[in-house]
Length: 105
Image (tube, rainbow, N blue to C red; front, side, top):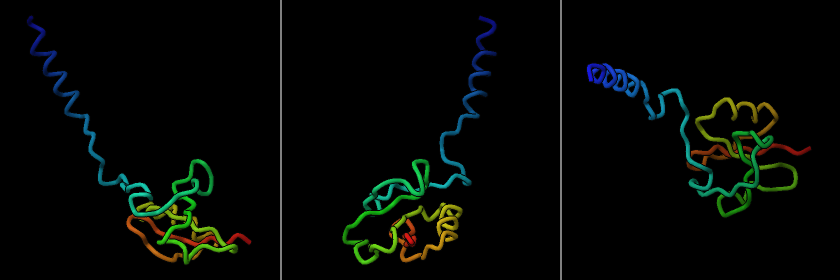
């Protein structure tokens, strides 16, 4: 049992490095539904951070045939800038999500 203190010390040192809390650099946000939004699919594709937003009382005035309503997490500034660079217009912030109208034509 002379190795027990050494084993315990190694275990403690290993566990001390396991921090499961999000770091300050990790963006954190809730799902769109937590902000009252309805989602249709990821945007621009399956791996996208943003979401195509569907119709409900919060979004009905932004939906139309000439554009797609997209929501991106507020903290995902690069994703928001990418959608804006496609010609989108930022229309509102709902909870933790920025709503953008992306022209379809």
